[in-house]
Image (cartoon, rainbow, N blue to C red; front, side, top):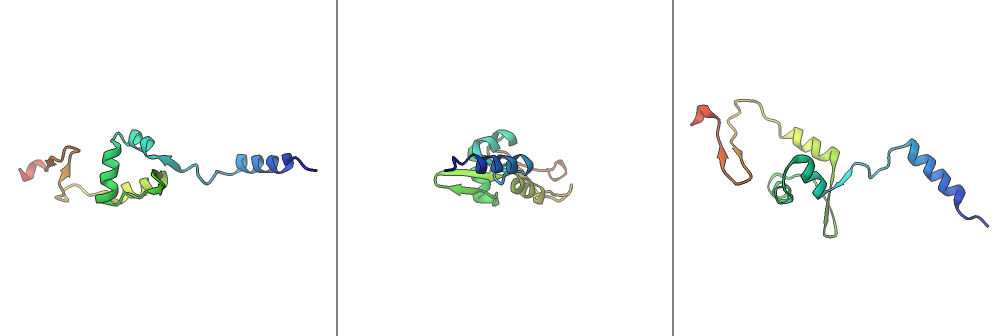
Length: 98
């Protein structure tokens, strides 16, 4: 009768050689810390700006690759005329428009 050690060794060898599929997934609190924002801000970005996320029950997770892709997709050129908003909701405008 086998105790499963051969299969476990095969799995451990696989995981050492290959990246695990969930290595890219992070918790919401961790993403908030990485970005220097609050979890409330992430909630706003999900609902207003379509920040990609993974709901699992009551928990929210993020793919780091998807978040980086989302951030880069929002890149704007200087002089685009877009206003920025602070977390408090204040609108920041380029000086030449004031």
